Image (cartoon, rainbow, N blue to C red; front, side):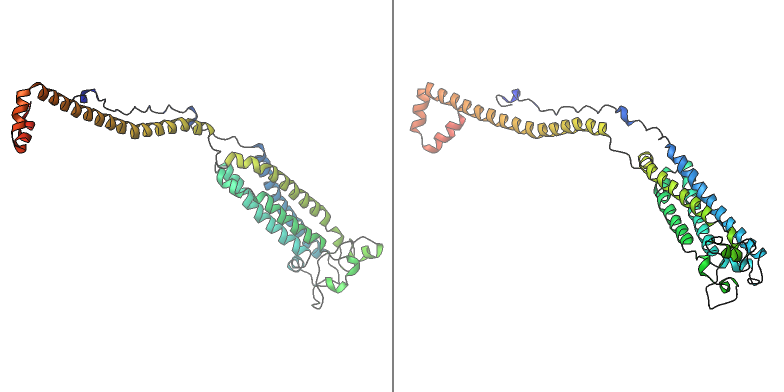
Length: 308
């Protein structure tokens, strides 16, 4: 081995310690169900029942009007009355409300069954459905015709040149109007028993309560069943490991180059040392030098190369 090569150090990359186990890596505990989840479901069930009660109330009203019919509306049947506004509007709105709330209750039951992500996707219906229902209730309530502005032919069930009606507002506003649409009215008896104000305010109040609960509950639902927040501790643990990896890569790239540079320097010094030794040996042997000087240049080269 050339002089100085034994002193060269063999580069060994430093061992990278295995990352310590992260205490935060344990599986997270199941998220607690927000209390508003139960309020959301309870109101959805109530709105489903409310739709059924509204439908039942106006189905009953139609039967009551047919039972109390007089000579003017002798052609009335339950089917006809249910097909005339405003009773037809109440029944349609109630059926749509029941369908929407059935969907909402199914979503809530899915949440109870552990399908929190599915419930989270459906939870905005707690806001959208009551808004739709409330608009329907408002349309039904405010499109009533005033009893003072209608004619008897609109309640006979036969005249096709006018819009047939099943009820009107203000049936007891005056004595004369009561005589036409009151309990013993001569145009359409018992129209005055229409519970329109009762169910309008009940339905709208219920929808407003549902909207309020849904708006308040949505952030809690998102926190409980939404995408998990980034783990700050995991990021902090990963940073030192990344830095150590980068340092090791730098050392691996630098150390072999430094070792190669040192090796070249030692080899260069070794060559110079050997030449110096040869020069000293030639100077010390004058006879040999004189002999070499008398020889041709080609032999000089040979002898030079054969010097010890």
